[in-house]
Length: 361
DNA sequence: TATGCGTGGGA
DNA sequence: TTCCCAAGCAT
View 1 (spheres, rainbow, N blue to C red):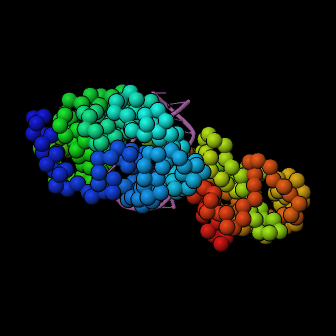
View 2: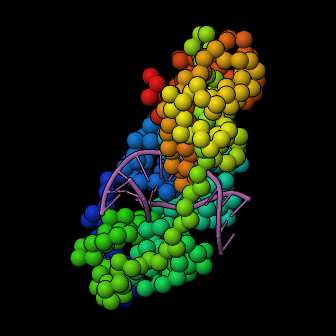
View 3: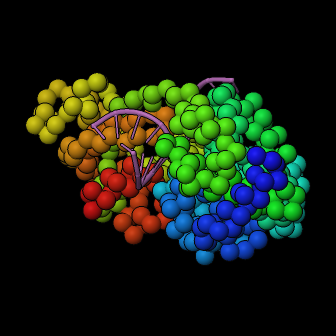
């Protein structure tokens, strides 16, 4: 398949089937950028409601730049990979301060912003400004790997730069944005990971994998190592007013910058198996000791609630939840604070804690 | 280069 | 149920 035949077949196909997505309504680089960050490692259907809400609240670079991080985080709650929005917020502030609110038009300037990698630069600059820069995401890696039977691991940086070179040679300078989106759209809807729909593919004629029947074994990707397991004891501490004790997580690492219920390494392996009937056993003494230390005082009561398992990308939390009734004398210090019921909506939590709140409501 | 970083959906 | 993710980036 000639280069021109390939690009025009792909563009023709895209212009026929392209989905009507909210971030495709304008050429404004700001909403395109927001959508690209939300779409990282995240499904389109998941992103749509978040995008609509976020754009309504922060419709411009200046609006987002002026916002408090705590508030911005709340609009990301549930999307995951929270460093994305912290970086995005910092980057938008930089655009406001350094570029007068106009998103830069060069690869180097855009790439220098926090949270903006080679994919996001290519996506924003090609879609919004029409610059002929490749935007190689997982979809494009898969499509190109099949089209040309690339057998190396697509997780390798070397493979990605090879694919960037291939796309650079194919990308039509007058339709760069559509071309990049067409490659991604094809990967997302037709050239899908398992059981690709090759009979619907506009590039099937020129596809080396399809012509050799190898479309299902490509692209090659090494399997990930299994997540480690952490057993934790979680306390929902209530004071006399019914406020709940929460704490802010560190600004780096898992769920950074979010709030959480206090939790601790399980004192013994057996705690996770603890049930209400066992609370009077020797194990409960260790739970009482940790709660006592947390409150600097002996709790009035501790009740076992239930166990939770929460799966992150690289770690699994096995949690044992206790409700603790405090004595009302405890004054928390940073990073701890009391949260009243009406304050709940101001704080951002990981979904594991929202699940706990929902169960207890 | 390999690993850390979330979540909810589909096979 | 279990696995594999889905439009990546930082370190």
